Length: 254
Image 1: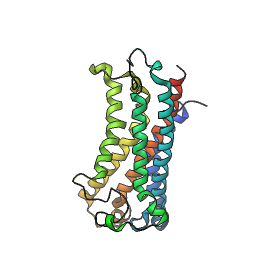
Image 2: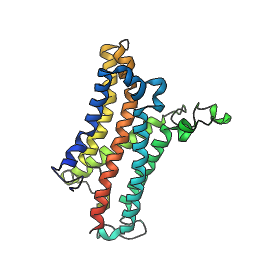
Image 3: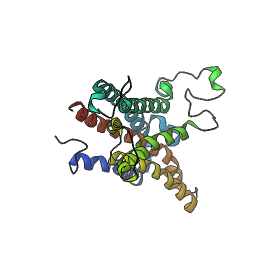
Image 4: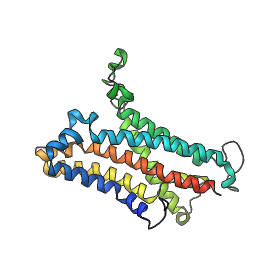
């Protein structure tokens, strides 16, 4: 079977298509069967128990487990695969493993927050003291000066879009980056998935500006694009995790 990252293989093509196919599927289901879409796929008052939320939580948590395993495996490889760039010291040659581990924690946090750390499915009551700052047991509903969603979005876009772009252009722009970062750098299909997720949210703003908020299509489909974006980000994290399996395996062979 071909590697996920191998150029021109069916698996690589599929990873490019995943975010677009997901969006087309959501739109097609809504247009063909709006009642079904609102009952089972995504609707504001029931969204925590519908398909989009299940895909979001499942993708994020599975990604976190895969990434944690990849981080451990890459850590065990140690600096030998990256010498002589690695240098000396306990963490020498291991910053790539640390980066993957941090993203694993971010994916786990994302999935945990989406289901309010289990409250969504197990139904416990929010502790009385905490209810004063949030109606659910999570941080993304707390009124911080900078929202948790904004911090998370900035982190994801930085590590899965900006840093990989700088890595790819480092030779052209004369930027020196540690060689051990290589296995942690997202591939183009992963970057594309994250860019599509963020661009899709911009579509909501554009639609609202041009067409307003009064239409049935806006209220039933466009208004919940933020949830669709979160699903695409979670799926992007899962794609990133699957690519890491290949990248770390290749490094382990060195």
